Length: 143
Image (cartoon, rainbow, N blue to C red):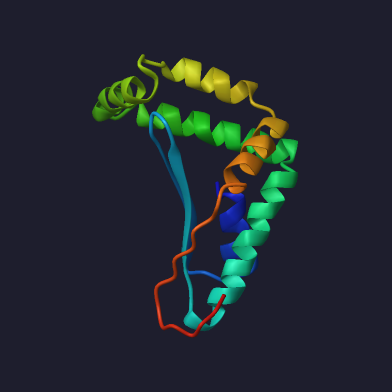
C-alpha cells in the first residue's frame, strides 16, 4: 500500500524517482521530514507538488484513506512483532518517550479510535511550524 504522497508524486505525476516521509519522536519534541529525488530540471515542480500535498492533508482525509492507513499500521505492527528485536526496541522507545511501556494492543486501539479530524488537526499543527527546505544538486537559484 502506497501513501498519498507516493501515489501523487511518484505514480500520478511521475515527478520523482523516490519519495517518502519519516518522523522521529523525542520526549519533548519531534521532527517530520519528506525526502524525494528527481531530475534536476523538475525540482521546482516536485517541491511545489509536495507543498500542495502538505496543504491538502490539512484540509481533508477520506474515510477510505483513513481506514486503509489504520489497516496498514496494524499490519505493520503485527509483522514487526515477529522480529525478536522488536519488543526490546519498543520497550526502550516507550520508556524514553512516555516513561512506561505501551503494548501493541494499546497502540492499535489508539489508532483505531483516531478520526480524520484528529489527523487534519495534527497536520495543521505540524505544518504551522516553520518549514526548512534543503536541496542537493546544482545551484540555479530556484525558490
